[in-house]
Amino acid sequence: MNLDTALLTAAPFFHLMLFFLLGGVFIVLLTLRKEKEVLLPWKVIFAAVLLLLVELALGIAAGYSGSIIVVRGFLDLLASTLFIYAILVQLELLR
Image 1 (cartoon, helix red, strand yellow):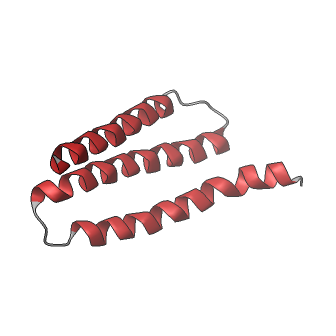
Image 2 (image 1 turned 30 degrees about the vertical axis):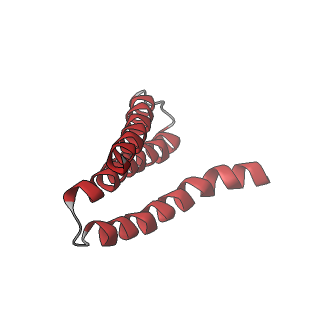
């Protein structure tokens, strides 16, 4: 097995473990008692991370089945849009 095929096989699972760790950090952050306006950008980022998690799971499933799923591109676009929206909300809160 070459290094590139080993990385292509293992990398999605390492990303999945990173997402679960990040999800735990977000759950701790979102359960803090803060003002709703302060937590709004973090909630939007959490939604974007969940979309990326779904996209990663679809990518792993597509790798095993050998099919290409078009929905993954739309999920990436939606997650990127949510990240940009979170930045704009944070800028509005800082004003």
